[in-house]
Image (cartoon, rainbow, N blue to C red; front, side):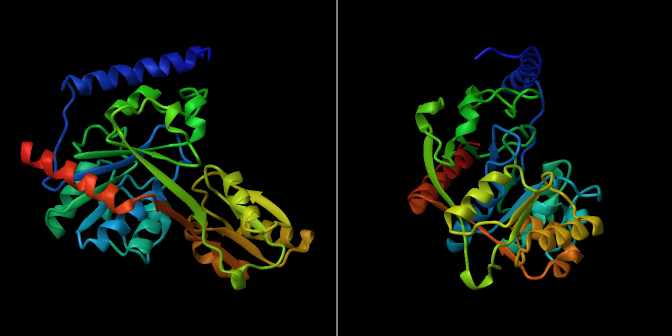
Length: 318
């Protein structure tokens, strides 16, 4: 594949930055508790948020205390803030709010994840920190790196032409590579890495789905959501897509209601993240079915055991 000049420039800048970290010429700060980074190679749509929730659920089953550290993308607040599950996405970001509601665990947002971790440890004590979208956040030391890859990553280009934040060779820094959306290990340089296979789907409760719904969402890969609905036997009467992390307005609601009337739809279907971003407009779109994303990690217990063993070994050496 011929590399676009703009992607080559971007790749050079990223490469220099990584080299400076590799040679310890840029500072790396450490928290008291172990840090597990969950990240990806591309911009959006690989399933980081559902995976953070899945990993948090696995830790909860083991009785392991943890928190989640996030940048809080899209929030209007500044500084380090402990997420209130009953709050608004403008204050915390839609994904941190969704994680806090689903896990009922502490989530701290901050531009500097180190400062978020310091606040968490000051209030809660040292514990496992799940670093949301952390693969490129190299200023915070971590004990384990999980990277999710999609089939598109294997044939994509670097930003700004493509969606890749880093070249595939960046997977050398990963401890575990999670294959999502039927990604194949042979398409990636994963020799010597833990390979985790993920099953991803949606949770359907038949009684809650309106007949011939309008499907709307503001997520990175909306067509994947529609495909999952069709696979489950739900055929949309109409579709409406918004930008990822879209904060819904009164005009959006009016437009959606008009679309429902025009398409003679029985109601609406959307994602959990969009339900968060609807905030006070949720009831105006009734009947509205919210479809959760469900992830299952193959051989989850052994995967978690392997991760915890690596963390323990690295803590002993540090």
